[in-house]
Length: 252
Image 1 (cartoon, rainbow, N blue to C red):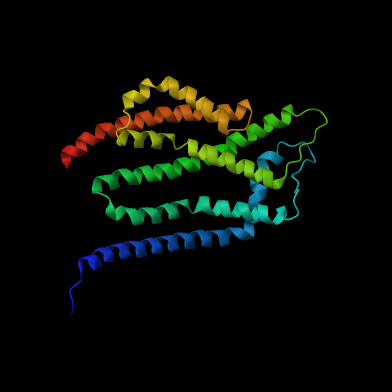
Image 2: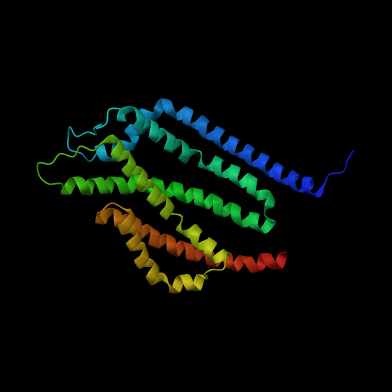
């Protein structure tokens, strides 16, 4: 039996990593596909639930409309797909974690797992806040200021795109504490620098809120105020983590 050459020894771990990556991708897609199949029969009910914040604010007899011929079919289907992605996010991230984790040090694993879980929960919290607080407030404001004699008849696809953008904006914005902790762990900033730059951060938050939210004061405030609170939470979390690190280094 011929001994393995250095080139073969190098290629073997690479092939193992590629096979493991393929396996993780297939498992992730299988989980996403199963959830999508489970949601498809309820696509219309999902859309009715998502449209409730607007329909509740419309005058009596107000309704959504379908401008395009195929919108009544494709729009709920698109919603089911995005709901499947959102619902399977923990499974998708677990597959990514399972692929990356073997190459991490024990200390990195201890830090990465809480950050990953916190990121998922904060994203869900941002979407929930957008649905239960922001959308009713925004639609109530918009229907209240519409000119007399103007009937609001929103296209179902345009409404879905609008809501998905709001979900993405608030879900991503609620990741601010995790982002601040990561910056501190990387050594790019310190908790004291974050606290000293609080004024600039608040100005930047309000500018960001004005850019990524609809052009009304209500939604801008509903994004900016929680982000300011989350900025403070990020400073506290980074400071607490900074105190733990020397103890862990000493224990190691």
